[in-house]
Amino acid sequence: MSHERNDPYFSELVFESTEREMPIPPRESSAAAVPKPAPAKRTSGTPEVQQLALWAEERREPVKTTEGEFVQRAKEMADYKEAPALFVPFKSYWPTYGHMTGAQSRWYFYWRGEVREGRYPKTDLSYIFLHVYELINGVGWNEPKEGLRQLEGLWEAYRDSYKRLDQYMSAWIADFSFVHKLNISLSRIVARTRGLAGDLAEMELMRCLTTAPEELTFDALTIMSDYDITKSKFYAGEGKILAERYIPRVIALINAYVARKHGQGLIEMFPPGPAVPRERYLFRSAVYDISLYGYSVLVPVARISKSAPLRSLFTRLFRLTENKLRELTGYRGRLKGIKIEAEMEDAVSRYLEREFRREQQEAKGPAVVIDPEKLTRLENDSDIVRGLLTVEDSQNPIEETDGMAGLSEQTAADVLEADMPTEDIDKDIVNDINESVKSGEPGVNSGGNPEWMEFNVALQPLERKALLLLAEGGISALQPFAAESGTMAELLINDINEIAMEHLGDLLIDGDELSEEYEPLLQYLRGESS
Image (cartoon, rainbow, N blue to C red; front, side, top):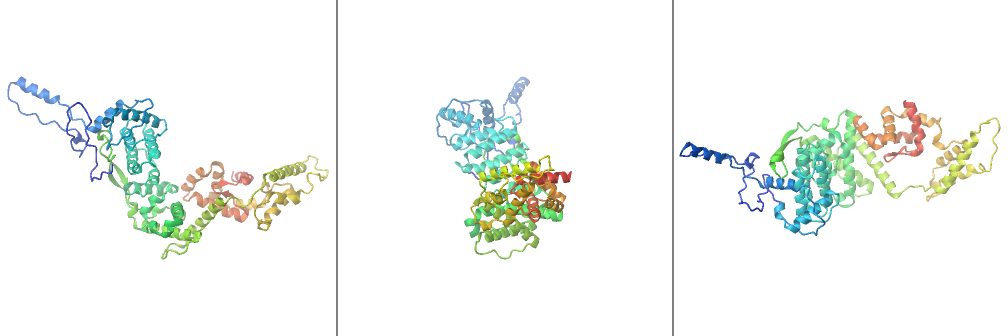
């Protein structure tokens, strides 16, 4: 299948047929696919003879192309199914129905029915290509999105078995999306094909940097760097997973940082030049009837990779990120000569250190192990205290009951019993819990907590709105708000947590989720913001 040509290649095969074989005309243009009738020759004889000759000329039928016959046959067989059949090997270049034996046809139409139901039995690559040819020629689906879903399903199901699928399916799915104006995210294609280059990579970078920086991928970004990180000893060893995970995040972080500081993102600050219409030949190396969607399409492409300022910045960010990861992992040796704005470097350093430490902690598990039984006893004890404090007859002194006896001495030890040494437990946490039990208030559930007031005052309106959005709709609600505000969800979360640590002594947001114990605080903030 790897047939390299300068011009688009379409099958020159002729269907097996009882009719006489006809030569296939060249494919320079869609018009060439149907040869023009030759001019009528001058004939001698009576007017009646001349008229008969003209009628015969008019009745001449145009030559049918192999691709056109394939599509016609595909439409006839679009709904055909076979009963369960035995698998029969099938190897053919540019496979069509005429190239299959009867046993192969029975297997194909049974297998195709299974695929349409979401089951993907093991089969040969030629069967897969035959079904793909049907789909790209508009057979087997009613809506383009359904055709796209089937193409992606085939690719995902068989790409591990047939590596060549990545080479063809990436381009064909992109062509399918252009033809039907589906405007899909090319990141799905980039993620499956390492180092996707050319127009598709440029278009994907433009889309991500302007509308979806969180969807940037390492493979797409490599065309922007003059530094080949794959030749780094750190990347070749333990650093590969870390670099591919964090470099796209760092680029997105800097894009948000620049937008927040200067009011415009990287693309606006360093415009790559106007988009130039590029002709893209459709469905190269496939059995495709050009009379359906044409020979090619024009797509606007801005050459981001040709922007010298952007390439310089991205190259330095690649190297800076690798240096910081080397430092965090204890890897010996550093890259030299990285010149970058001090504030950018500080933002990258703080972000990487926070994320790296957080993921390390998540991998290790929670530092404190709480005994569920003792936690239940604490909750029961707290209920007793609250019940006694809300007795309607507040005139009578509350007498100590057996339920209260010894409660304050046991609470902290019971709840914070851990696998770590006792001296490592924050004494302030223990004191806070004991004080809350004595006062009948369950810690942060106190409505008039002055720390909440300080935290609320310290929050900027943007941060308060972000916090409430995160509480109501999760990270998916926060991301578009952050983008509209010229920042990034991770930056907002980081700022909110810094304020929380300063005024509450604890992280308010763990990962992408709010700590449940601070729900009363959120209710307080909602009341303040209303």
